[in-house]
Image (tube, rainbow over the protein chains, first blue to last red):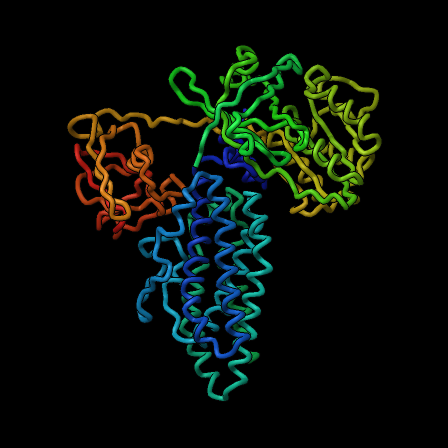
Length: 249
Length: 358
């Protein structure tokens, strides 16, 4: 009974798991990769944004950015705890990688994973001042919400539920960024140029975070019930949202 | 980190012909470690013929029952379950990790919730914990259990469920569905499959008024029940799944030794650099990965997936050669620069130097 192939068949048909011990080895590995990528992205994103708190022009902006930093670290911890149930050394995890480290603004990493941690490549690029940080948060915030909503249906139920719990707060981060961009835009007739320049810089990098249109890994993740909607479909949803917002301002 | 504690067997009760309920007492210094949440399980380890085997069994007690017990159904060819059913004695010791598992929702004592539970065979074990805990903690809630078995004699916790029905009069309903026995009502005989669920939901159980559903059993049953629930309009996030906790893929704890893979002797002198500290030790070239050997030396090496997928255990190989079994994480350029995933690396040379700090 309950051979690995039975569990894989169960997952392929939409079944869900709730205990680490039921996870077949490759499933476990891909699940941990998803979790590591999320945790590393949150920690790297928070570390990068923390530096910009001082750049916030008013007290509201400083409060909002502090809150975003704090909550992203909290979200990382929640998922890290699930990794711990799979045996990851979570006490050690926080200090393994230099979360603040960034590449040069002009470098192009493409889709190749940068050495070290598992953060999405978009979090390897440096922020360039307050407006740039808010625009990046707007674009990546929206992408994150779409990606989290997708993963909240994943077949590892404890992770799906955790992502479901994180989702409203990440959505709020995105809304705060949208309010921030509107405020910058209204404050200065010249601001739109800077906003569009940052959007041009970040758009391709955020778009990259959805993964390739055709990916063998995506097929595998689908068969595990870890993913459902295609990368391209998610990317298009994000692009439409971004276009609509930028057209509005 | 996975830590095992010795639990003393204080009682063994035969429940059905091929299942036992084992009561366990944690050691005095680990009492708090064994407080559990309803629906959680214990993972045991035991060496059979030189091979370590780990098996998980759901705790079948309420959180306030003051007792720790698991139900073990004998599985054909299952070493641990056969051992527990045939050899285990009161007074023996079993090694177990602290309770784990996520097959529960937070208790809400003030609410009147209607729960549905679907158990197949030994999938009843976590349900016992859920039923006992929920009905005690939420005085206004009800629980309807649909419980599938081959025959009456195979029903685990049959008497206990009757007792619970009497204690929680009107709040616990149990529907037995028996595969190989004709019952008075056709509805209650047969397999717990999609058609049976549809019939039950049409004539006996109102899914629309239910708040949450728990399902534990074999894979086809779980799929059938969840499909049927969703067709009735139940939201996906209101359905909680738990595969039989004991339904684990067979784990090969030891790596198969490939003859002649490594050069020189069977042992390797390894040097590990971590946080600026240099540690040297001897390790077997075949038996353990570099990461496992380092952990065994109490080196606090970083790791997460242990499957070559994430890159948490990445280190730079300064000297010597290793064989990496799997690498889904490192890019080619990292490998060229000498980076390895230590969880997947086995020494090929008599000496290796591995640096986690680079």
